[in-house]
Image 1 (cartoon, one colour):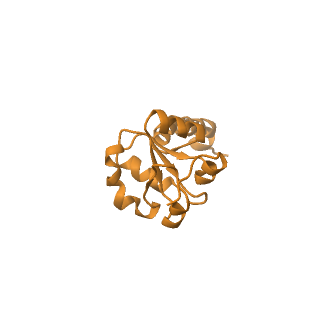
Image 2 (cartoon, rainbow, N blue to C red; image 1 turned 90 degrees about the vertical axis):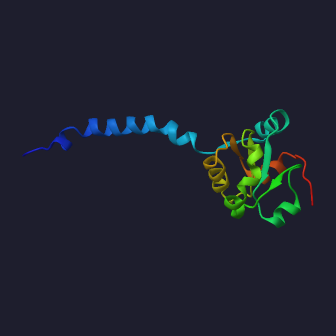
Image 3 (spheres, rainbow, N blue to C red; image 1 turned 180 degrees about the vertical axis):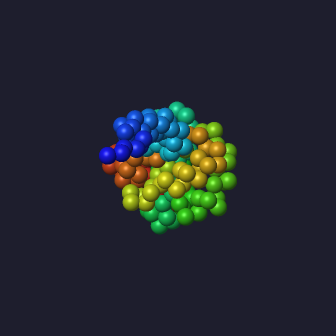
Length: 137
């Protein structure tokens, strides 16, 4: 029975593909938005003057949002990200509704040069569960 190069060297081919993927992972991960907990978010807000960006819809925002939060619904982020230009060098903490993936807002900001973009893990539910202050407007 005649064997081919691919069959004879399958182990080495798979190992080369896996190691290549592991080498590329830091490049891919660097462009993604990291989730952070409420304690790290508060530290960024209090000590690094982070922008709190609430990407929920208008009704949810009016029902209660973190103090001094900037509101841009996720559906409008691509058209309105320039409003955040002055915060480009500061951390940005994205507040969202669980189920609404904040990845779109973070991806738009990262694409436009924002280096420190974070999602509050669990979104507004985490903020409320930790009894952090809410402003009703």
